[in-house]
Length: 266
Length: 163
Image (cartoon, rainbow over all chains, first blue to last red):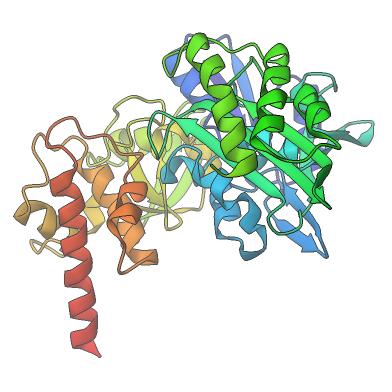
C-alpha cells in the first residue's frame, strides 16, 4: 500500500527522497495501475510533477526534453514534429496527458514506443543521483546497462527531413500496444546507406537497437532485396514474446514486413 | 502515513479535502466530494470511465494521487449542465441515443468536451482518436461519434449566432 506520496519542488529534494527509498513516479501511468491492483509492500512515492522537469528546449538542431514532459506536450510542440507520429501511436489522450517522456523509457514491452524512437534518434539522457549528473545513451539505459538514478532530461539531434522513419503495427489504429515497432534514422548518400540507426519494439523483453540490421544495410543501396537481407540478419537478434496482442510466431513472421514498410515506405 | 489537506477548484468551486496517500483523484471526487459522475472501471487507465479534466486536459483520474494535484482545477460531468439545461454535448448524447447503461458516458463526454474545446470542427478520425481511451460495451461507437459530431455542429452554430 501507499504510505506516502512526496511532491518535492526540486530535483535535489527528489534525489534525497529517492536515497531514502522512495520510488519515482512521473506520470503514474505505469506505477499506479500496479499499485491500484496489487497488495504491494509499504511504498513511498516521490512524484515529479512539481520538480521543474517538464520543459522542452530546442536550440538549433538539438532538442532537449525534460523527463517529466508529457507525451501530450510533445504532441503540441511545433518543433517536435518528428515525434508526433510516435506519441500519437501511444495509448490514448487521457493517458498521454499524464504519461511522460522519461517514464516511457521504463515502460515494459510491448509498450515504450517512444524509447524505440529515441534509440533510433541516438538520444542521450542525463541521469542524476546525489553524487552528480552523468550522461548515458537511451540504448544503454533501456538495455539495463547503465545504473539508474533519476533521469532528468532526454536530448537528441533533430534528423534531417525525411531521415527518420517510424512504423508501429498494432491491433487497432489508436490506443494499442505494439506488435512490432520499427524506428530508424537513415541517411542515403549517392545511392547507398551511409548512416543508419534502427530501434525495435515488440520483439523482445526490452526496446532494443538492431545492430545486425544496421550492419547489413550500411554501405548498401536501399532496395527491397537489401532490406529483406537485413531483416533476415535481424531475426537473429530479436526474441519476440507471446502476449495478448500477438504470438511470438506472428511477430517473427511480420517483423520483415514492417522493417520494409519503415525503411522503404511500402 | 500522512493525511494531507488537498485544495482543488472543482467545477469552478473551491474545495478542500483530507487525502491519504492512496487517495486517487477519482476517489477524492467520488467519496470525499460526493461527485459520482466519474466511475471506477478498470483502475488501470485503460477504460476511461474515470476521465475528468485536470487543468483543462482530460486525464484518467484513477491514476492520479490526489496529493500530487493540490491546487489544480478539475472539471467533471457534474459541472457541465446549467441548472436543468444540459450542455450541448450532453444534449447530443441524449438526442442521439449515444448512451445505454451510462457507465462510460461521463468519461466519454469529458473526452468530447476537451476535444471540442481545442478543435471545434473535428473529423470523424479526430473524434475516434479523442475517444480511443474510452471504452463502451453497450451501444457501439457509431452513435457516440455521431453525437460528438452533432454537438460540434451545435456549438459552431451558436458561436456564429453570437457573432
